[in-house]
Length: 158
Image 1 (tube, rainbow, N blue to C red):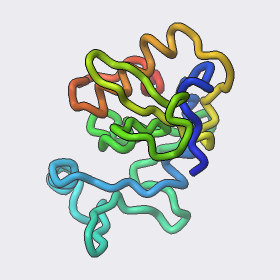
Image 2 (image 1 turned 45 degrees about the vertical axis):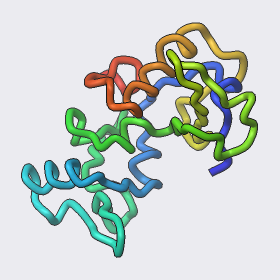
Image 3 (image 1 turned 90 degrees about the horizontal axis):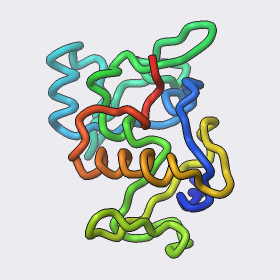
């Protein structure tokens, strides 16, 4: 991933293209894995030597990807793993993808580094809008810090 610092992003909105569900492996935390196993069965997960993933179909897409002629969306909408809730954003304590001055974001008493995966088709590059800076990014940060329960700006509206 050639990550883009948040300050180079004009706006972001999920357009339900499904790229995130087709091309990225989702690592599950233990409570996420347990919830999926209890609600759907162990066959919806896939272990590796040191991680557990959401299982993928033979075409590479997530088993929970639902598609209509006009949109793709998550079948785990109200129980999405954190990695899915955060994509295409990376909220980090240290700069990992370069450009630390452009990636730095001050949130309350913390300095975080926010990057975005440019593969997301809902991304618009340019001068950040007020909504992006003061609504979208803070919600992603709250999800990353486990202080957000519901998504308003950081998911597609179904």
